[in-house]
Image (cartoon, rainbow, N blue to C red; front, side, top):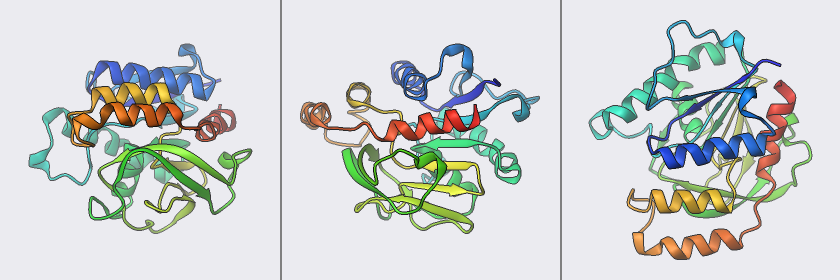
Length: 241
């Protein structure tokens, strides 16, 4: 099969490596099945041909597309520009795309939707989600499930042409589809308790929560029963691989 292109947006090596391992494990992929690009370390090549890939998977990151340019570090601006640069081709051609966490902000911004910190930011932890529309990527997923979240910004309204697939009480736009093959989730389909513990320790001084809350959040994540979201990632790989 063609490889999947995995674009990573985390400039912290430990967080990026853990996320990459999680995407492989939860997607049922090996390193030979993918091409990994850490956008903080290397640019996308000018000759990138998306026809060479089965699909594109975009991971999460600490950046916010709604931050003003002066609030972004040069690395954050570089990462955001690189991902936004391929979105016109992806949506115009309806190429398989799975944007996780930061990816829903990227898709929303590209589609002209409002992504901001006005409402729907989510504290680090789990949130109850509910499927509200059928979709092939949701086959075999329980109608109601818990997922790991932690976000400063969120999509404020459904972009024109998008289909709303999953909602939660605190943040309504948890998963959407644009066209037939372009997907994004607010929650983390690749995350488990171990991975979230790693991120809590790495990002405890990044403004998601008070640093002294880290140990309590880790214990909460360890006690959580989060297993359904990874089915979505596995379904994406199975459908397009």
